[in-house]
Image (cartoon, rainbow, N blue to C red; front, side):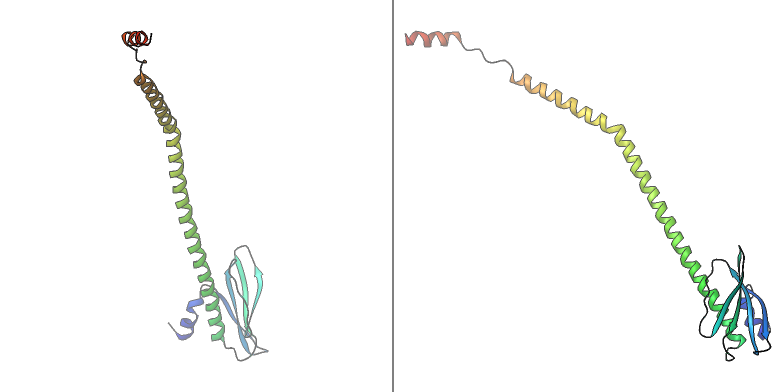
Length: 164
């Protein structure tokens, strides 16, 4: 690869043209970037969006003064690319995290509904069985009490006779 080609290689997918402003004597780049990407100018470089379509934006990147070389413009395009790739990576990480949380919530909801269904199926039967056991134990307690004891008729008579 030759020097200029290797210098432009990192921005090749975005670079549309390199032009020269013959009146001011400096270069400017025309690049195409995806629609959602952000770009901002600074004190040294101007970023002018001159066409925006459904798929992307065409931007002109130009120096603000004669001290900015074409190399600086290429470096600035690389900054735009790297910044937006970091933003996209962060968005992807967040999306993945949200997907994981969604999956965990779905699993938790599934376990909850399974437990709820089990409670619906078994609660009444279990509580009903316990109720029946309680009723039976109450009947058993009443049976244990039994009949009242009969008093001896001879003891009564004896007691009544002696008192007379």
